[in-house]
Image (cartoon, rainbow over all chains, first blue to last red; front, side, top):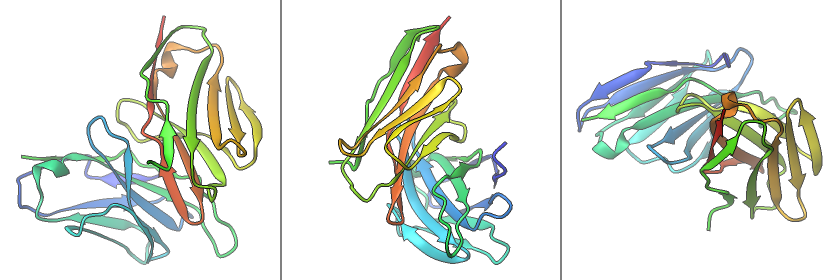
Length: 116
Length: 109
């Protein structure tokens, strides 16, 4: 158990809908990362938050957005869903402070999204 | 061209074999190197982490980094069926992290 939790485990929804995925990082970790993994594809980095602020952006679609709350949990919002958005969505966390940067990321179990 | 290229596999070996998994990279800003193991599309699990050239050993696993050649490897000794999984290399630096596409390993009893 990595200490990172994600809800829900599975989500089935229709095209055009909007969903929210939730992530709670390991205790003490300030950074949260979101990744998408489609069938037979690698991990695609979407976005990183550090202590409530956006730190880095990857290949995140405009239909997707994220935020990190004061209690450090994060949510990934996916809207106007398309069939191609069906994938595993992983959240990871790492410890970063003003002087220490840890690049070791600890992953949650993922949310499996199916768009029909 | 991708910043990180990982040997695609799949790889199938008999139990007890030595396995070599490899990645190359092009971004000199990468200073931290990691290997993750992913079972059946579960969350990737951090196996090894290193930031210097040379070898780092942990049990049956050895991570090797050659920064001059921009090449990293993971060696698994005495491979077991339980090692069957997808292995992902990952590299970080200058505020950026990039993963390889993964190599799927099957260890046959």
